[in-house]
Every structure is written in structure tokens, then in C-alpha cells.
Length: 384
Image 1 (cartoon, one colour):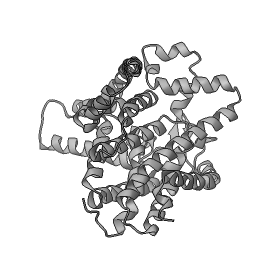
Image 2 (spheres, rainbow, N blue to C red; image 1 turned 90 degrees about the vertical axis):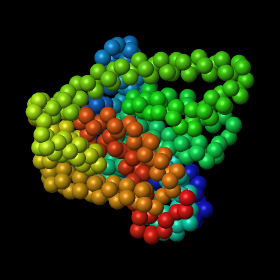
Image 3 (cartoon, rainbow, N blue to C red; image 1 turned 180 degrees about the horizontal axis):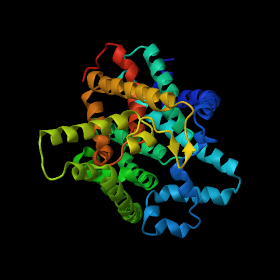
């Protein structure tokens, strides 16, 4: 059994099977506590994507500049079928496969790190990964965040492979193109690109690229240039959106309250501001993170929850505990190479210090913390 858990396809199959078994329970549970109909298969931002009626809207300056690749996927699905139930099934299936494959990549890395661990802890890690209700919910939501999960997963895998030089001849030549495509599906991933220059990925990519056949190299340059230009183009769109949120929820809003007179009390206010951002990032639902109100229970005049203690408070306590203990596990008992790769992947979270935060932005990293948590209680530290 232990040998099977070292293979990605078996990890993937176990996760998929577990999630499908739990689907009716999470669906009924959400419908019981959430007053919005079909909330498992819906996302607020997704409605805006679906309401884009024309492919030309994707390339207009403004809000639709973000996540061009994802909007094209939605546009194609709308062409395939006009039946809403069929479209929701396709979107949910795509999310399920994407986020589960992301987990499979990360869990395979984690199990390799803990290759001397007992079968029991590996099975518990898989169970945690299946039963984390937040990950389970987003496994069926039509969200760009699932592509963010895949982007972070393949980034961490690439960083570890680059450090160990555990690669085939053309690994990074293919990897960089795939990563740029994922950046079109989840725009925030592009924040990683400048930092790749400071890792071994950049030099290995150049070396492998120069080894390509001249004809293939020419085609690769054209495709690479097109993807880079398109990513830069859409990045301008997310910057305009970020500036609005930055001024409304970020450090400028705090500075307006503090004023020009700086004191130790102001320093304490800044510390509390950042501390709350981290708390929200590790635990709270979107509405709480955007308002700072732990008891918020309405959106656009609609009452959201039938029990705000469970949906707002208890859920946050559970998620915070999972992520804090998972982070402790990562830094305490995993190898330096794994820790460095994990820390590097956190770069996409840095702009959130002066923006709105909530747990959806931490979703890619919760895949890691959730799977790593059980090994904290095993008591074995991996030798570097």
C-alpha cells in the first residue's frame, strides 16, 4: 500500500473518490447553512464572467482584462451548450480535476519528503486533504482560484526539481510555457515571473532552450513572446483593480485615519492592521475579510447564513488551526529545500498586505498546510 501512495495517479484517484463520496454531504450542508440556492456550484465573480457576451470584451481595457484565459474557457463552454445545468457540471468537473491534480502534485512531494513515515500518517494526510471543507467546497466551484492552486503546485515542484537537478532534458522548456498559460487563467500568478530569475529555473530554462532544434526554437520564441505580451497586457488590468482595493482596504485607508502625526500608538495600529490581514488570510470567508465584521450575514440585501456562529466563527477557528499547525509542521519537520520552495511560492501574497484578505487567496497554500499537518504529530524530523 505504501508503494501505491508514492505514485501521483493513485493519490489523485483516492482524492477524487473521497470528494465524490462527500459531495452529497457538503451540498446538503451548504444548503442547510447558506440561504443562497445552489451556492456550492456558484461564485459571485463567475456571474460577471458569464455575462460577458462577446469575445471582443476580453480585450477591452478595464476589469475584463484580467484572467483572459479563464474567460475564453467560459466562452467556449457557452458555445458548446446553452443548458445551464450542463455548463455547471462542466465547470465543476474542471474545478474538481484541476484542484485535485494540484493536491496530487503537492502530496506526492510531501510523501517523498516523509518517505520514512508510516502508512498511517500518509493515510491521515490524505483524509485531511479530502475532509478540509474549504478545499472540498472549492473543488466544485467555478473559480479561477483552482488554476492558482495548480500554478503554485507546479511552481513548488519545479523549484524542488531545479534544486535537486532532478529533471529530464526539456522539462523547463515545457514548464515555462505551461506556467505562462496558467497565468492567463489566474492573473496573480504572473507576480512570480520576475522572481524566477533569482532561482535555478531561469538558468536551466535557458540551457534547455538553447539545446532545442533551430526550427522548434523559432516557433518557441514566437509562442513565448505572444504569451508574455498577453500576460503583461492583462496584468495592467489587475493593477487598476488592485489600486482601487489598495486605496479602500489597504495601507492608504489606515494612513488617512492616522493622519500626519506619527506616534507609538500609530505603530501599534499598523501592527494590528497587518496582524488582522494575516488572520483573515488564514481563516475567514470573503465577506468577513472585506468588511472586518465577523458577524456579517447579508450580501446585496440577501441573508447569507442560518447560523453565523458556524459559518463565520467556528469555520474560521477550524481553518486557522489547520493552517497554523500545518505551517508549524512545514517549518519544523520538513527539509530546507521544501521550506525554501514553499516560502518562495508565498510571493503572490505580498501585495495583499495592502489589499483585502480572506481565505480564498490562501487556498493554494492550504493544500500544503492541510497535507503536512498530520506529520507534526509523528515526531520524526527529516534529515536534510
